[in-house]
Length: 252
Image (cartoon, rainbow, N blue to C red; front, side):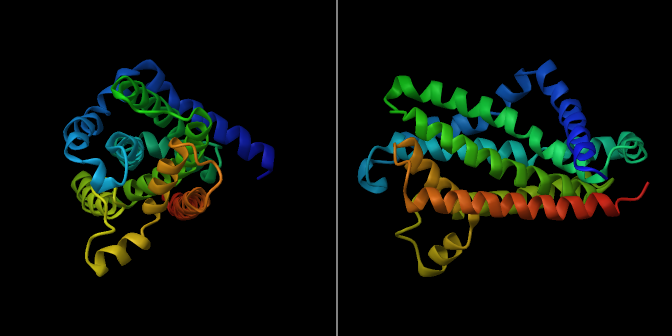
């Protein structure tokens, strides 16, 4: 397989996956209902003394990451539907390269993530949220890389679940919320017990969240940003490696 073939195959899969999103953009908006409810109900409960500054400046980047995590981790459900209807088997017998099938699907996750982040920021600005545009753009790049990894892992879970839809959602929900809470997205974990702080430090999402808070606040060059970028690249590399291996082993 040549490099140009892989790129063109990835572009074809990316276009195929993105088309339903463009035809039905309201699906992106409705998927944000839960993060926006968290923003409305949790932000007023976080005084500045708890988060070390403005509660909105601390919480809005968390909500952007949460929206990204919810969306990317659930995208395997689309592949699960294709497996159940036989559509995925037809894709496997096509001349498309198998790595392109997972890479193209994972890259698609960047587009709805950008749209959701923009809407959340636009909702928060009238309530006093201060946005650093350059920092926010760099933050979206990091989140885009992170979304590719989470999307690839979600597709891998769908391949492993096959016709067992309950298995996909059970694993997704069981993993999602502990990872989310251990990243300090809802409440600071610095004042928690030692085991909680250690678990938070080995959670890649913790570094992504801290990078978003730094970037949205205007810190473009800091150790938090470097840590978040490294964590996002690590998750993307792991997700694509596992996803590519899984789809190569998928039978027809």
